[in-house]
Amino acid sequence: MGREGTTRMFKAGELVKGFRTRTVPRERTALAIWFWEIDRVLLSLIVTLMAIGLVAVAAASPVAAIDRSTASVAVNPLIYFYRQLMWVFIGLPVMLIISMLPRPQARRLAIFGCAFFFVMLLCVPILGSTVNGAKRWIDLPGFRFQPSEFLKPVFVVALAWLLSLRTKDMSLPVVPLSFCVTGLIAIILMRQPDFGQTVIFCACLGVLLLLSGVSMRFIGAMGGVALAGLVAVYMFYENGRQRVNDFLGIGVQLDAGPDQTDLAFRTISHGGFTGVGPGGGQNKFRLPEAHTDYIFSVIGEEFGLLACIAIACVYLAIVVRVLLRLLDEEDVFTILAAAGLTTQFGLQAIINMGVNAQIFPSKGMTLPFISYGGSSMLALCIGVGLLLAFTRRNPFMGRHTVVKWSGR
Image 1: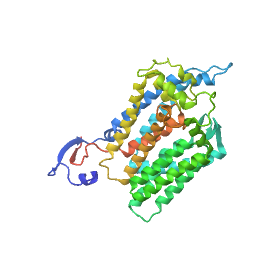
Image 2: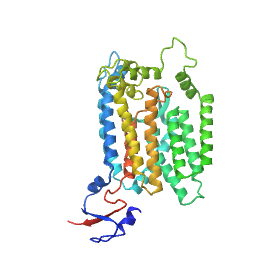
Image 3: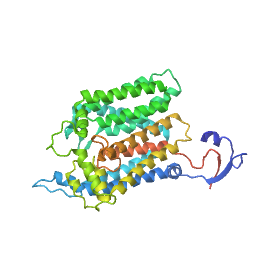
Image 4: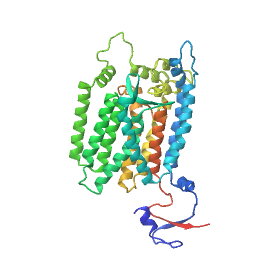
């Protein structure tokens, strides 16, 4: 029985047989209502990740500062920590404001955002700038942003809304449309090249299709297509083939030295269980992009394997918390949107940690809320803000609870 059905079963001051009652004061501010309805456990876990990220970026900032220093220009060793702190102060209010939106408004915001950032993604080949051999960014005055980062969370919500229409009218061609849009995005990302983000978009589509109730025969066919796609990537996609070959050691010269994943694994294992201590890491200075893609290895070297396990547990707790929150949810769109956002968030964390642990080939993907990056931080805050908005509920409106309001 939903919350609306429960509230219709009583009048003010009247007891309903079989239900327990609780009298609560009628609050007059939207902030108080938000505080009642927000998932404070989930919010606390996200803030914990942000705090861990600031410590990790402070540890990795000297590496990036040295890389960008020249004989004439010296860079502050903590410059990237100060910048990350700024992005946290900007992103956290954005996340909280979005989490205050009612579900319909949050859905509309995501759909319009999806259309906008999809257009921005189409503009990357024309207006984009190239960094480290990849053309993924658009430069604005004082800010460089990656459209695919912002597109991920809003695309998941828009896709969830599209697939939720299938429950109302099975004749709507929402599944072919979902494939077409995701395929177009995948083609654009592969040309940048950005195979890691392509995997995230396709995986979210697969999860949402599975949850939307498509047949198991269709799921099996989709799995076969995915497997064939991976084979095709290795055979015809130069960037993907090179990364896999480097990971497997195929065609690598004996005197070429360790590749990125080897360096990351050596760094993360150098700290042992307890680490060498904050600021004591030496292997981190050999890492490329130590403050972004390989920050998990920096954490392992300076704070130890136990810290890495604790961080992995925080990510797992976030995923489990959202799934538990959805157990008694009845709205199809809310289930799809929250599950899709959690899939995107959790899979990105798994891929980044797996790359650092030498389980996966290098993907060029950040660790959510821990790696340095303005685009990544703001996009994640938007995604988690939407997730908090969709998982909000009144704690006084349980399945067997009647709420009796009293004014002041």
